[in-house]
Length: 264
Ligand SMILES: Nc1ncnc2c1ncn2[C@@H]1O[C@H](COP(=O)(O)OP(=O)(O)OP(=O)(O)O)[C@@H](O)[C@H]1O
Image (cartoon, rainbow, N blue to C red):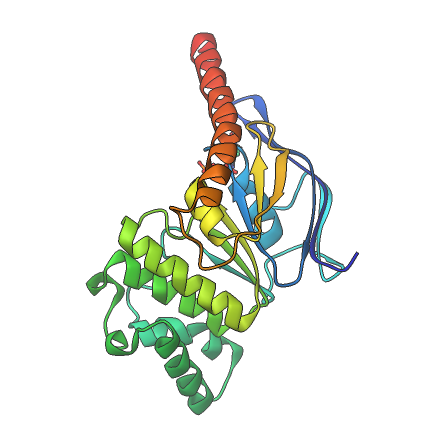
């Protein structure tokens, strides 16, 4: 199969306070080029661990991640990552933050300026080019973080709860922007969230994960036409179905915490 990202029998074990934590077990996923995938599940089910394995930040304990058929061993320019906590350089202005990766790549000044200007336009940041991150709202900072990753033109975008810290209205705005950019630039997106509504609003495909070990509980296509209406009956039917699945795992998380509190 022509997978852009192939996750092949991936396991991840952490050693923590003398105990083994089986964070991921037997994950198999083939993600075609251009697909928008959401990894969904309650806290602790291994979503970030899986994303970090794809990013090359933390390799699996067993199994492999392949991108375009090549095994991932480290972070690489074809995989851009956006985190929840923005990760901007506070001492740089918006335009310097967006252009930083291009400077490192050694692009000529004029090419950097043109590309940065285009990205600031794309993310409605033109009026903020000379501001510093501390003078921006959370939503604006996350726009800068997205522009900075897009500057490198990675075909894969990895996003770890990127809108988790934003208020509902800003979050919806950025979801719409992201869908527009994704449709225009045809990226493959792997997006981590614990919001069921966010997953249904965004994804072509939702992968629900189980709590410890993290496995694939359900792999579900979302075929509703975009832009999706969260008030539509089909949206709500899917929300109920996914709600039950996530709640089962939330319950397992809760029971595991009660057991571990009893042991300690
Ligand atoms: N470096 C680490 N050392 C030990 N255990 C870890 C480490 N990183 C993650 N874990 C454990 O692995 C499991 C999966 O963690 P992970 O952060 O991937 O989950 P998650 O689904 O992304 O949760 P959240 O939404 O809270 O970020 C958790 O039980 C976590 O405690």
